[in-house]
Amino acid sequence: MRALLLRRLITAIPTLLGVVILSFVLMRLAPGGPFDGERALDEETRAAMDAAYGLDLPLGEQILLYIGRIVRGDFGPSLVYRDFTVSELIAQGLPISLTIGGLALLLACALGIGGGLWAAVRAGRWQDEAIMGAATLLTALPVFVTGPLFVLIFALGLGWLPVSGWEAGSPSHLVLPVVALALPFAGAIAKLTRAGLARALNEDHVRTARARGLAERQVIARHALRPALVPVASYLGPAAAGLLTGAVIIETVFALPGLGRYFVQGALNRDYPLVLGVVTLYAGLIILFNLVADLIYGWLDPRMRAE
Amino acid sequence: MMRSRLPLLIVATIALAALIVPPLLPWTHSAIDWDAVRAPLFSPGHLFGTDTVGRDLLARTLVGTRVTLAVALAAALVALVIGTAWGAIAGWYGGKIDEAMMRLVDGLYALPFMFVVILLMVVFGRSIILVFIGIGAVEWLTMARVVRGQVIALKERSFVAAAEAAGAPPSRILTGHILPNVAGVALAYLLLTVPQVVMVESFLSFLGLGVQEPLTSLGILVKEGADDMDLQPHALLIPGGVLVLVIVCLTIAGERLRDRLSR
Image 1 (tube, each protein chain N blue to C red):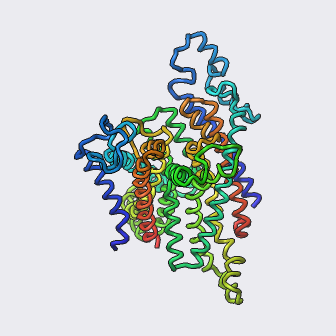
Image 2 (image 1 turned 120 degrees about the vertical axis):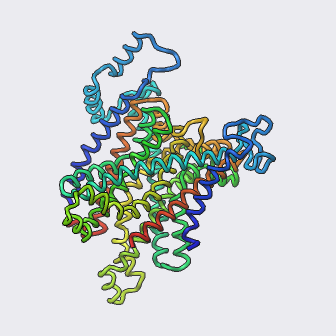
Image 3 (image 1 turned 120 degrees about the horizontal axis):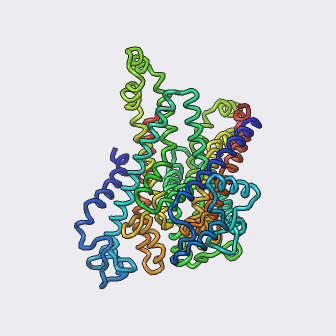
């Protein structure tokens, strides 16, 4: 297990470097730059600006300088939010995005595993069909449809919850964004849990447990559930990536000042350092999350640790 | 039998309507009816009403569906071609080549894809062709894995050994004997890729990074509807409903085909 983690860590670093270099080169290939505003700058001012931000150096040198700086946690100045560094913007936005993403992941796991379990226990009956049908529907619901729809129903229609905003993370402002973000992942997790449990219930050690006369409830809780959750654990990596991208939409729909909104603004305004910083950070987070998923994997299924 | 074909039938009907109906309507998707701004549902001449600047929502929804489906199909085909070629080569040659090729796929899987696509949009401008090339180029990974698995399994079969014994060159065995047997599973995953791409395209268009005006797509319509939903909820519900229906039906059809073939 330790060897596996070490190997993953060793491949994670070049992956991250690859992302940074690729994004950097792509950004520099772009026609037009951050100083191309409505008013054309004269040559001297432009040259001075380029020099100030290091845009006049050769590409290779720029990349090395950039990597050197981000290792120290300095993502450079934002080109659009002039008074802020990218690190400051990340420090402002990341906690909000992580709160929403983390809560949504917890909710998705709770709903998904619960629903999947219930469906598997009632396999073949109407509850099973209903839950699996709902799960398929949920996975197909894009957050940019459910988000506005929830606002329409629960905020504008019924008036139960606020329409949008953050308000220092007050719970009532969190409900709609978190639920809208969590639902598609809850559906996917329910499907995986249901399939995993059906497979686990056919395994030898479960048959042995049944032969020993354990109650079905105990068979599932003690022997079948852990191996059944292995596919769920391996889904956590892609789910984390999906939650981060979904959060971009959710933050736009609900006007939340998270990292995703800065990213979209940065992308629309060609704010290179901001976009690069967020992509690097997200790639790092996703790689980190895949490592955590591997750990959970090993804990769930001891056979994986041997490899 | 009826039940199993229903999802595809629904998608086919929607696609056909999106293709045939718009030229028959009195309004194009971008024409403005100055006399009927924000017309409600079922107004005379505007079955679905009009949007905030008086454009016919029925025409807009149909044209948007057409654009969304066309982009999705094109991107899914790009993914099919790249994924099948990549997976077939990796699976057929095996060993170090396989290891290197699939390691790359694993690495790419770990990336925040939507961000790479957005990066591409930012860099190369927001053109519809780039939208689908960009999406197709990142959606091929699953296809590559699936095809590779299939090819490895088929490689051991006796008809491949027979073809080899008869002296057929590897390229012929691959194209003539193995790929035809992969086609069914590849088709199932093509069906599953289309809704994925629909989702990505709508996502980008919703943020203003995908399809651009005057062209429209379901993502743009959902965005416009969401901006005006307090006054005209149906402007959100209709395009959103079509979008969800298409995604659900294609997903169900794809999953059924996949399950039937893997049994």
